[in-house]
Image 1 (tube, one colour):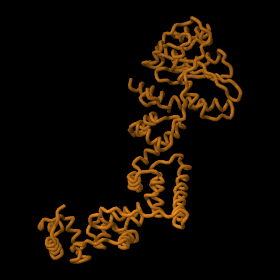
Image 2 (cartoon, rainbow, N blue to C red; image 1 turned 30 degrees about the vertical axis):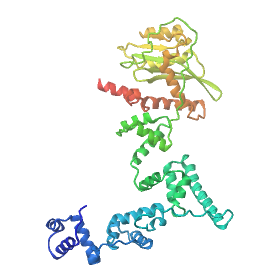
Image 3 (cartoon, rainbow, N blue to C red; image 1 turned 90 degrees about the vertical axis):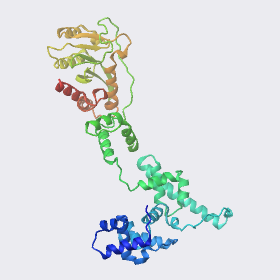
Length: 449
């Protein structure tokens, strides 16, 4: 920064005050900075010649408090207070304000100028054990610990985990009552960490809007979504956010996917030689109604066994039909087939893949497929992975629906199951479908065609 002589300052100030030229013209005429000229004029109007006299004042604590009180009581800015109290630089007042807010009144004590002596200061004698001074020190320490842990416990009960930011917040709140250094030692956080968070306390959270949106999506899907699916959903809503950032924010908010991973379990039934494994684990389909897979799963509710038989289209993993029954009779499969066949057209060439369950070995089932010109495919003996996609769906359905919901009756369960299938088909997004739901993917593909 350019240094100007007292003569230059006075000449420029008097020229502006006595003349008719603007700050800009006057600054250019005398080759000085226009911003500095404005400050000189303002200080000269208040303090006269004293505004430019160099002072090496070692400001007292009382003077510093007067300046800070003036700012608080009048709402004046730091620059205005600098002008009123004739302080050379506004940064000086800014430093006082920061020190007082972060470390308390002790930090305003003036420091001795000049080179520090190399002589070691004698160590203060520790108070004798059992003396009044020692007891007072111990009482103060216990009082500090009690105040600190009380505030920490209050925070932990609200959010479950205490972060370094929380510890810095507690130290900041207690800074006027106890020494900051002692509080930092108790909180076990570095000074640099504390001052970092203090500077950011008053700043608005740049991710505040995003946090609300992530919480909303998480609640809408009842905790079924992890950070990847929430990332896809954010993209669908016009917010492209890196998945790592979504993961970090979910961790800050304490959001965790509630779905449990399930292993594949397949009912093998009686081994037969009805149909070969034509599908051969080629679970991708280029168009709807090209490859379907089905199976039956069992679960217990209210002391009763229930059997669930869905049909899935491998094109978009959509459940196109399903039945629920209290007994695993053939009608459970035949009724589901009749519903699924309503989706077919005369142009469709379809493969239906199953395991070797007895339902799919029956002549009625094979005849129903032959009448429609459908190719039958069956898993090999003991190979649950041959029908892994439908097995995976069972795991998802049980984790996201069966284990998370409470049902009042079997009828209530069937109503909620219908809602879940609707949700699965039309709202639940999948990564392999480019972040779309099965229904959205089908509609998007048909529109593109």
